[in-house]
Amino acid sequence: MVRLYYTNDFQKDQLWKNAADFKTLGGKQAGFLLIKKADDTAELAVYFEPGVQEDTQVSFIKYIHEHLLKRSKAVERQRSYVCPHCHAPVEAREAVKIRLERGFKDIICLVCEKRFDLIDSIEQKFASPEFLEKVRAMDEEAKRKLDNESLELILEGQAKAIAGEAGQIYRDVSQKDWGIDAEIEFKDDKGRATGQRVYLQLKSGDSFLYKRKRDQKEIFTIRKKRHAEYWQKQAYPVMLVIRTSDGEIRWMDITDYLRRKGPDTKQVEFEGELFTAESLCRLRKLLLTPSKHAKK
Image (cartoon, rainbow, N blue to C red; front, side):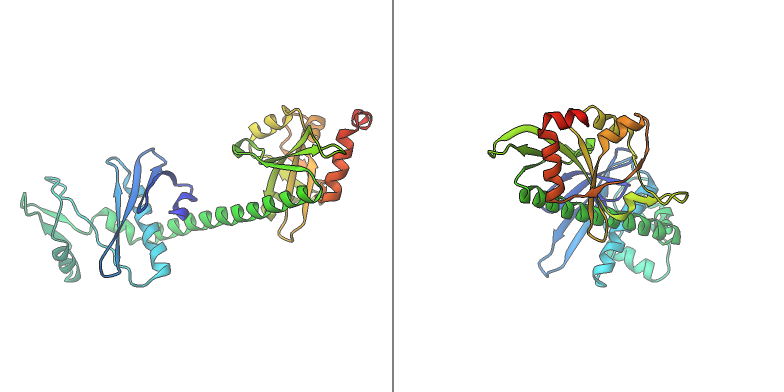
């Protein structure tokens, strides 16, 4: 369930104890239900809302199948068939299995007595190298997002620890999709909250910075214009905080940079200093001293 959620193809809809529903890119429902058996086995039943595209169905089924195969070889896939002529479900699963094992590729519907293919386009696509590569790419994307989220959780913990070491107030932001992940409110010399603060945009991983060839400067790319617009509207500085794979954490005032370089800036020359309790205290002193803040 978690890995499907982190793919680009399916979005989490509703969760229950033994079931999960997702929304496809077309807004339709796809899901699965876990049915536990008395003999310590279980059945994972996959279902789709009418109108889900065939390729989407195959991707969903194939992704689940390949995920289970990685964790156990004792996995058997059974297809639930519906007669394309009269729409009656085929209840004789064992008969379907035997016919396929014997090389037969079709079956007679017991209701309308018409033949239909067992190796239909869904089965053909399921067995194709094309869809195997597609689900592997989906899984790589999910893994990358999970890894990035894990790294961001580490950064959040370290940012909180740095604020605590500096004796300041750290708060998470619940709605993070606007480009602000947390805030630090500064205390005065008597330990009282001042209302003065900075906002943090946290990024963890080497993918957020690259070196520009002509001058070897580190560049951060602003991927969402609305984030840049939002940062510039804030009454307090927004600090871009980046943690690289070597564990080094640096930060810079992204609000001030955008105001100097222009509102449409996309490529930011990242010249951040180390984000430590000492650098946080220096910023606190700067922001809580009116005369020095004015000169800046």
